[in-house]
Amino acid sequence: MVSFFESRMFFILLLIALQAQSKINFCGHNEVRKNHSRSRFLADDALRDSDWQPIRFAVDWSNMSSSSKTKYEKYVNASIEYYSNALKVHRIIDPVAWDSSMSTLTCNYHSDDFYGKTISADYFIIIAETYDVEGSYVAAATGCAYDVTTSQPTFGYVILNTAYTDDANSRDMISTITHEIAHALGFTDYDFPNYLKSDGTSYGETYYQDGIARGDDVRYIITPNVVKRARIAFGCDSLIGLELETQGDGGSAYSHWNARIMKSEFMSPQADNADFIYSDLTLALFEDSGWYKPDYNYGQNINFGYKKGCDFHSKKCIINEKPVFDEFCVDTTAESLCFIDYVSKGICWMSTYDSPISDQYNYFGYEYYGGDEFADFCPIVYSSHNCRIPDCPIEAYGEKYCDECRCVEGYYSLNGTTSTLKATCHYVECNDNSVTITVGDVKVVCTESGALVNVPGYEGKLKCPIIEIVCGPPACMNNCYGGKCVDGVCSDNSLNEEDDYNTCDGIDGEQDDGQDDGQDDGQDDGQDDGQDDGQDDGQDDSNESGSIYYLLSAITIINIS
Image (cartoon, rainbow, N blue to C red):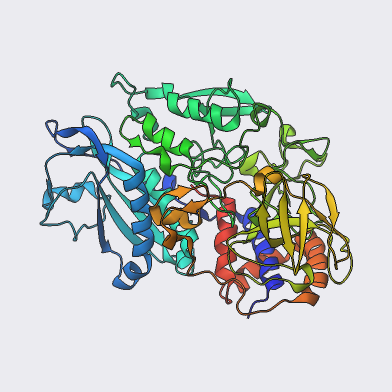
């Protein structure tokens, strides 16, 4: 049985090991795309309806075993439900008769579920599987065929590497599959030039603008709806556009939002245990394709950089070794810290790299030391635990995990003041200009963000969270299985419940470990042993109970493509 802190340290060590190796991409979209050429799908005279109607999917499971279909079908259905609700298309009027001539459309996969049928759909998708422990990706997708008149993708596939996905929970799988289907629908630099302007002509290379920001080359998506909504989201009326990721040597570059700007958005190249935001900005990009009309009721506000102004895009994350924005961190000695949404907690992650970091990203005077390369080497809290997911509450800290629980930082404990900052989960209640935090059996009222306040019965102080953020709507769990998220709650109440999370494994309290191991391991192993032990433990522990949860989280931090 893996304890809370053993799991936490496995996450840290494996994360560092994978940063050094960086051979496994969470999403292999660009890798598989280059292996397939696209085919014409609809004839020149194929008709589409003039009205906008919800997109219809047809799914082929014949490239997946029956047991895998049983495991993954609800996650695929949730992702398809999201796009069916969020996106409308000009529907293909005539049903498609599927015969042997269609074999050229399927990217070398067979389509037994389609064969011999006449199907009314607007997008045909194959779900396939592979089991490859040495494979370079966890999941991948691409389009295989397109409408010859509009260049709109009409056929594609998603492949899951079950060596990595079989032990993943619902949140990991829904976000992964939804991310991959977005690529298949056209969120890729292969399709961007084919997007249609309002006059019906394609953008070509005018969909983007290259520029300089924060001392480095950047590429902005400058299509009209993306620009409009990005300016509103970030509170910057002069924003040129929304940055695409430029890192990744083709694995992530130019087919994702920039992780420095859009860390928690589901089309960022990275993810961890923080909840994804399925934002209106990605829906805006789909609208700018000319192929889709989104329902923005299914888009959420970003939380990373939200309303931070133009400086968030133009200024560096760290100046004089201090974070300029709350989204970033420098405290690597902390036992744990809260992510910007106050829903999840983790560590301020930094690493020593094998090659020098370029000068514009050298924030600490040591050219080999920095945060994540996909986010301008900015140090960001990478989450290992989520306060809304059942976990092991530490009695000495008065912790609780629940739907209304949020992350709070402090130095308090029943066993004495802790010397390093830690993040803990507690039930919170929000009022007009204050937040009440329940620690154990006592309540603490915060009226000023950042204030240090006493916790009755505990030694040490609690650091009040940023009230407007901790009291703001969080991301909805599991993207409501494709349903509507309203103010952080699924409109269908039955979808607000989690059914497959148990990171505690039945361990209660662990009061002593919360004091001793949390401080010692957080400082020593996270900094010193990450280079040495990270490689060994990542191999040895990967099959232990509970380890895959951290393996997937660590992999997604490295690269989703």
